[in-house]
Image (cartoon, rainbow, N blue to C red; front, side, top):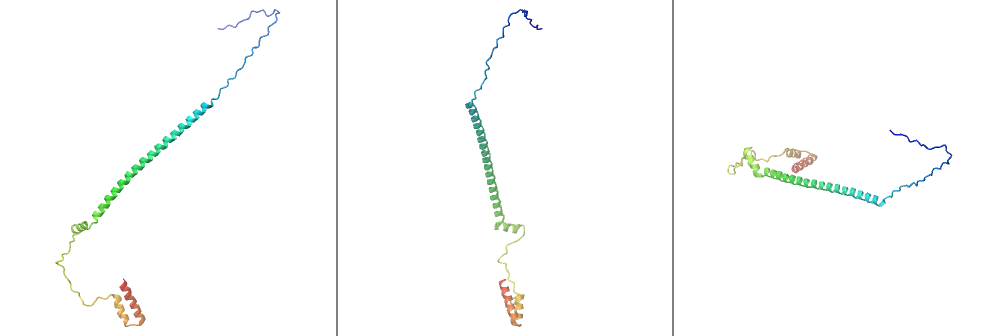
Length: 160
C-alpha cells in the first residue's frame, strides 16, 4: 500500500513564498542524417542482383533451346535412316529379278520356250480394213463432198 505524503509545514506563517524556479529545458530535436551514399549503394546492389537473375534466366532458356535442337537433329537422322531403309525395300521389291520370281512362284507364269514357237497362218490373205477405210471406199463411188469427207476420215484414222 502506498501512502500519500503529507506536508507538515505551517502554511499559515507569513513567510513569503518563494516562487518556484522555472526550469527551462532545452528541447533538442534529433535530426537523422540522410545517408545518400548508403541508399545509392543499396539501390545499385539491388539493380545488379536483378540484372544477374535476368542473365541466368536467359542463359538457361538458351541452353534448353539448344537441347531441343539437338534432340530434333537426332530425330531427323533417325527419320532419314528409316526413309533410306524404306527406299531400299521398295527398290528390292520392284527389281525385275524379284518380279520374275513372284510371277513364277505365285502366279504360275513361265518363260516361253523359243524352240517351241509356232506360227499360225492368217485366215485370209486380204488386208484387214478398218470400218473407216470401208466407208471411204464406199464414199469414192459417191459425190465430191463425200470424197472429201472420206479423205478426212482416213487421215483421222492414220493419226490415231
